[in-house]
Image 1 (cartoon, rainbow, N blue to C red):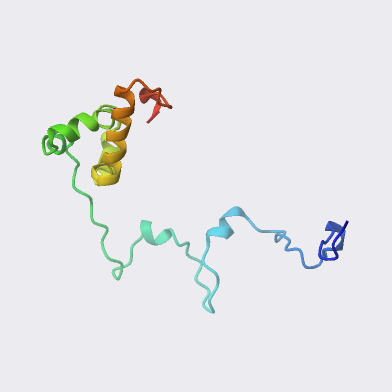
Image 2: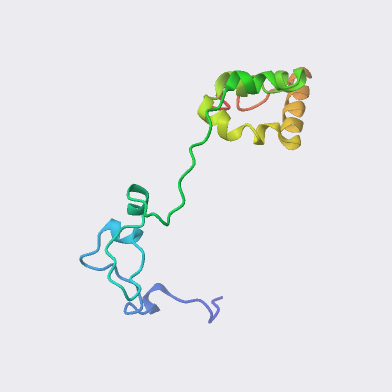
Length: 130
């Protein structure tokens, strides 16, 4: 039983199909649309050549892993051993606030309890951050 609402691929008008420009390059996708003025600068060029009106980009302070670990409680150190030992400092600098959230620590507590009860956990711990 067919319904009249189904369309067949041949019925779609080919004229309405969007076709790529013949002389288009992949970089044209990343350019800002022309807005009256004929600015030929790339959106990324402002990063290389910032104008005086652009706010300066602040350098983030260096992350000190040892100092961060020293601030953790004994339970947090135990639960986050995998993250502390396997994640690179650049990742820890970005994830340090997230891995200290209640939800993440609750998940780690649950996994610890499951492991202690003899259950198999996948992926194996050594493959979690690989």
